[in-house]
Structure formats: structure tokens, C-alpha cells
Image (cartoon, rainbow, N blue to C red; front, top):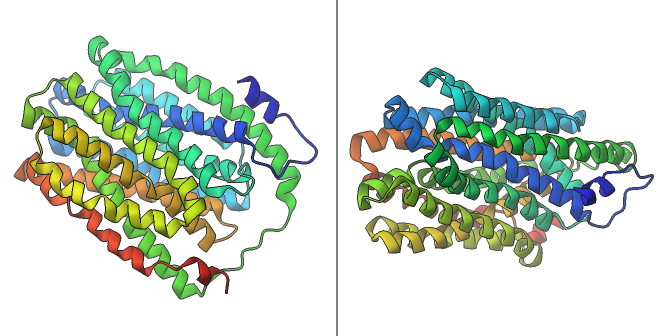
Length: 402
């Protein structure tokens, strides 16, 4: 905390060097944000038992959470591109704080939906501005900064099921309220980051922003559509794991709820590792190379997963999580380069796209699971990474130089 406070003290001339304490601060808050939101999916087995929910209702919880975030994130991003709002960061975390309290004490399924929506709103406010802060503090190392920022979120998603397994499952749903302590810490840190952001906006941020498009408009539209489809394939598959993997393991192998959540933790931990490495590799070898490897490279392993045993499933999901997650920093950086000067809008659209597509996929997969069974769902989802072939339509680095 001391390092963060030192960095966010007002300065007369923000340095061009990479401000790692600021990046680490927003990454830590990304961790907190995503721990809070991952608790929702991590306690699905508890909610299913407490409220006698069907799979379609589980899908609705995911849909409400993720669509709340996806619909608001582009709006927040477009607005803050024009009018920076540094203090929106702690406000977003406060919304997640309230969502936790609702989830802990909700008396009905309708109130569970309200709690999910509040956490979604918190995420929608947090992501565009926090991503902007990471880019501001990057010192030109855009991929590395995005990876550090995003890995905080992935680590939070991985920690959520683990914390649920050892705290919420033994102590019951009201123990979710204990995680408000993390939210309060996030509010304090984001307030300090907001002060640094305000100072940056007053000094360095006053320079005019070049919004000249690097490619013809039609070429950019095509590239953005390709990136959207790649995001869909990645997040639809990830949603199949994060929302239903615990049920798949319980139904297929008869494991306990705690064991299933530990298995989910392995997958989400691999996602965090893949995200951390994806950005620096993209800085070194190019974002298109990372995207090719990430989306198509996971295909052989996703095809094998529905036919693997318990230990095989654990190994395969770790490999899949690592490979498939490495593309997202590269996708965000590529989109920011295609639309210069629109950092908030790009972050809002692509983080929102990730949430929205994951939510829609989760709801659809829930209906399919009720109708055809969990194993059939994983057999169908295994083909999603094949959409990675669309990477061939992305512009190459030499085209940007024209």
C-alpha cells in the first residue's frame, strides 16, 4: 500500500517510464473485483440446493450478471474517453460491495438476480477506466501492462472457487458477506489510484490525442468483427467451464462439491498464467502470432476433454486454460491500435463483449444441459476454438506502417 501511495502522490510531470506500482495497484483491484464476481459462479451449487434452482435459472444468474456488465461497459468507456472520471473507480467497487451483501442474505431467486446485477454494474464501471490507467502507466509496454492488469482479474477468478470451497461451503451462504472486507480495501486503493489519474489528466493528459485511423475504415471494421468472433469463441468456451464444470465433474465422476471447486481452481489458475504471458509475448513476437497460437492451439485439447477421465480432465483443462487465455491481452491491444485515442471505448466494448458473450453462452448452455445433458454440451463446445481460423483475416504489422 505504501508503494501505491508514493506513486499516486501528485507530480508536476508524469514520467514516461513504466509506473509498475500503479499497474500493480489496478491489477490488485482487478483481483478483488474478480474474486467478488467469481464468488457468484463458485457458489452456484450452494444456490442450486438452497433455492432448488434448475440449470436454466443458473444460466439466468450468469446472464443477468454478465449482460449488466456488457451493456454498460461500452457506455462507460465512450463517456470517459471524452470526460475522464477517475473517481468512478471506487464507486464501481462500492456497487460490488452492495452486491455481495445482497447475495449473502437474499431471501429469493429474484433478490439473487439483484445481487448479480449490482456486481455486474461494479465490473462495468471498473474495467474501462482501470484498463485506461494501465495503458497510461505502461510507458509504452502496452501488452505487458495489459497482461499484468488482466492477470489480476484471472487470479481473482481462480481464487473465488478456492475461497468458496474453504469458506463459503463449510460456513454457509451468509459468509459471502465477509468478502466485503476485500471490497472495502479495493475502494481505498482505487481512491488513491484516482488521485494519480487526476494528476496525469491535468498534466500529461492535456496533450492532443491523434485519432487518425491506421488503416482504411472497411479494413478496420472487418478486423474488429474478426476480433469479436475470436472473443466469442474464447468466452463461450470459458463460460462452459466456469458455469458448469463443477456440475459436469459431480455428474460424471461423483466428486464432492469441494473437489469440483478445486478442479475449477486449477483451470482458472491456468487461465491466469496464460494471461500473464500473453501480453509480453505479443510485445515481442506480435499480437497476431499470439492470437493464432491461443485460439486454434486449444482445439486438439478441447476435442479430447469430453472423452477423458477425471485425472485426464484435470490435465486437459489446465492446458486449455493456459493456451486459450493468452489471446485476450493481444486482442485488446490490437483493437486499441486499430482505434487510436479510444482506449476506454475499446476496453468497454471488449471487456463488455467478453462478459456479454459469456452470459449469453451460459444461458444457452444451461438450456442445452437441461435438454441434452452436461456431457453433450461439452462435446459441442469442443469445436468453438475452430473459429480461430478467422485470425487469417486480421491485418499484419506491416500494414499499419503504410
